[in-house]
Length: 302
Length: 83
Image (cartoon, rainbow over all chains, first blue to last red; front, top):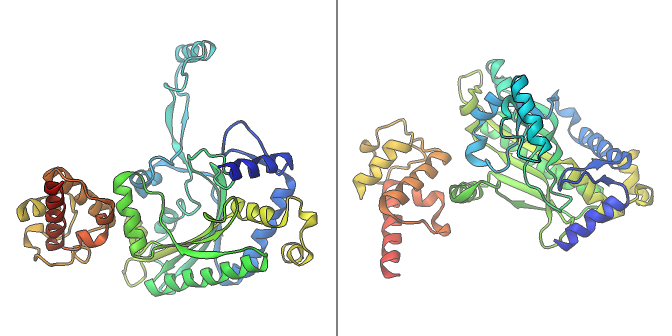
């Protein structure tokens, strides 16, 4: 924890992250954003020729889609829902009175149709399902979104609102598992170019509760999730900066994603934790990009 | 025990085939048991037999077939009696 708080304080002092008073909710400096923009261009250089269809969704998604996704079955502790005041004049007066005396004014807030996006690809599946059958050659999508996960922490690499860049592949089992493997290779190559120490390991999602323990064990047993890890605040427990997920036909079945021959599509996604990668770079090469080695700067900025 | 397990599978297993017709060693995942449904089955069995699965048995293998579930439950019951 000390290492995490220490790095967070150094990031604040350097002005790279901007404190807001809430753990895991930070502003970013121009220099920090410049690193993220440069890294996204590097992603484009590796994946840009694959013919992905780009889509950008805002960081909120349709609550109905969120409910269908089953997120609350697995990660109720991480979800963030958007609530608003929906009352009349009388209710407004009560609300103001409540705030004035310091009582809980949020109790009367009502759920809106929007939920904060938990992963960049969540709005994609229902969108693609509406289009009809997928070609037998599969489809590839390029996404990026701010995502929300309710997990306040002093670890700068565990933020509550952060950006995820994703490629999502839909098609046959062979097609999507090949896609996942190719990005595991590319991910390692990219991070090595940037002078980062990487390892890839099998992983599991933070499923909730005892039932979640079983979900996590199942996910590991089947090698469904791998992570690319880079030391940021700990060498013993390096941080997941990329993840490589094979969903089998779970999302295909859930959303009715079918191939032209009627078979249920398999899906896989590869995610980049953009803030985490920027933090890994700052941690490894120093808090000022102008001091970074020339070869690293060249890869990022040409 | 066999009947109770089949009842639980029928109730929460969400299988496309009747649980009563499954062979003892039929692969439940191949029969359509989803990852989430297997968790529901686990919770149903814990309640029915008043047991708690230790972490090392919370995996796919324990729920791979009706026979496998029986072995796992017997093992836990025996360990609880011994404790």
